[in-house]
Image 1 (spheres, rainbow, N blue to C red):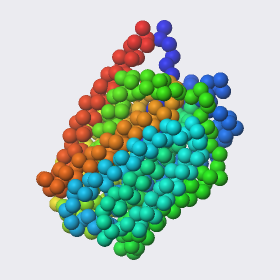
Image 2 (image 1 turned 120 degrees about the vertical axis):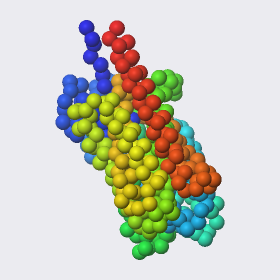
Image 3 (image 1 turned 90 degrees about the vertical axis):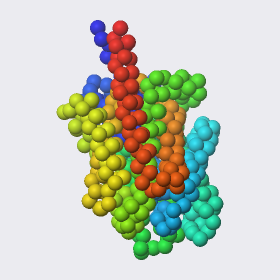
Length: 437
């Protein structure tokens, strides 16, 4: 007899999935949503079961979305739409990535010693001070100071992400789908707010004033975190050897590679779209930022819609349609010379990217029956590396071949994602056959 399979961990960030236990809070499966106290990895159970304590951790994803997406929105404010210093633009993304990776490694040692609350407060305070530092280093201040400020923001983002992965653990154990849905919606909302904020204030405020407005959000969350209590990892949480064992699983390796390339696709567009549209179409910076907001909105809404489409359409058909849509959108953007073409290209790209994660999350879910915050933070750190290295590489391509080269990486990356999704589906099917035997 085929034994019942547990639906396990999916990356609790950026995505809206279709796991069977819940869909937007509605129970559909037989898996108990509350984890047993005997198997829970978290202490202070009163906090673990307190919905208010769980809700207080979710705004960290919104702050994380702002930190990750602010570069793409602020570059026109720094004047890079007026000069072709594309390699310099790419170096900002490299600096952000280095900061993120440094802090992600430091958080591994910091969390067990100081706890979730301290890590979230520290990350938020660093983000607050980093934006204030950048406000003081706007042009004509030399570029090296802004690179240091962006590195500072990357460090704060890494700490914040490590802390929030730990904080949502009890929520994820109890209701996986709702945790992923809310986390993804919060992160996407942060990205959307970033684009709208800069677009709405571009002509009304100075660059320094815009960055001060950015600083308010992590500053407010630092105060909220300092006055809150969060669930802490139990002493018997996953050890480093267990973490490495899980990361070496074929499913985890494939998932990490897919996220590496998919983040590279998404953030290549997000990081360069305003500069590309300004130089390609001659539109104003404010208009280009509104189109960036359209891109984030299409990703956010597309992932919600894809959950319902997946119930009614063959996943293979949906995958092929998503890849075709993303490729078509990138080609349209590369060769368009008008606003209508840009809007259609953005919608095709956004909707094409949107369905990839739900498809993969559903297939990968059984690979990780236990929640290890360190595992997901490690996978997410690798994904972020792809997300920021791709825009860095584009700086050198655009320097050599012109701004049109910005669309090359999303085209190539989309083909890589298509191949990796097929491998993940195959791995999930083979794992299922092995389990039945």
